[in-house]
Length: 324
Ligand code: COA
Image (spheres, rainbow, N blue to C red):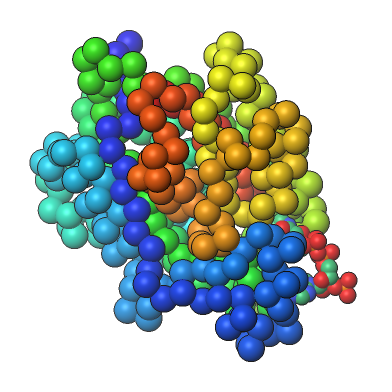
């Protein structure tokens, strides 16, 4: 089987910054409460005319430029999102038009909530490994602000909008860069901990809230367990010691969740890339946005082994091991 690698990355964040202080003028909260419980200081919020597909397209353009490839090179496009512009067509089809990708491109959205990007990466990798696709754009993009109840202080302080993208293709000859492994899963019977109950086809849906509802403490515990377990499993499966991982890009939900995982894996917190202080939880965009920032900040060098690890509503979880 030929090897596949991440050939480039890009990201996009809306320009509007909403600080904790600004939120504390809308709901009963404070910068001190939000920062000590979550590590978040501010988040980006999309403008009224800005959509998930537009943010996705901006991130994808940057990833193509980074990979030195053109839209004509792409034959597979996956957008991981739980906030597509509309139920149909898929955000991926809107991105396809925006970028001018050819009619030969397979385009679809994938929803695994905040684990979406890791799921999409694995899906694209498997499709490339089949030999029937050459080069993929894998995007995580979310306008989470569109499914937030802005009067609910228990959720509105946590989330933000943004997009991140990677180009996945055949590993460059002579380079050691490649995808090493991936592991996905979902813990059954945990869906009520984190959901958007309304807006779908469930019988109760018309009256149910169309915003995120969450049992914070339950999600916190599930998240730590799921990310710790899957990180261990993938490292053992590929015979890589935690100390060999140069950088961990965790889902950016809460700094205390990341601290707990660092402690369980017995790794220094400095090994984890954290940007949630500036972006909050951008759901499926969180990992590709952080990955792109980490690369641009020089935190990931050629030859480094990087671990991506995420959890999200479902409760889904997943991890990817990549050598750059
Ligand atoms: N500002 C001020 N007070 C707030 C608040 C806010 N924004 N949100 C909740 N509170 C209050 C609660 O009402 C509660 O008050 P009470 O004791 O009078 O009932 C108190 O603060 C403590 O709330 P609690 O839920 O115990 O806080 P916590 O330490 O568990 O932190 C979260 C709350 C949400 C930050 C934390 O549980 C968490 O991060 N969970 C995981 C969420 C997550 O990652 N979701 C995304 C998954 S992809």
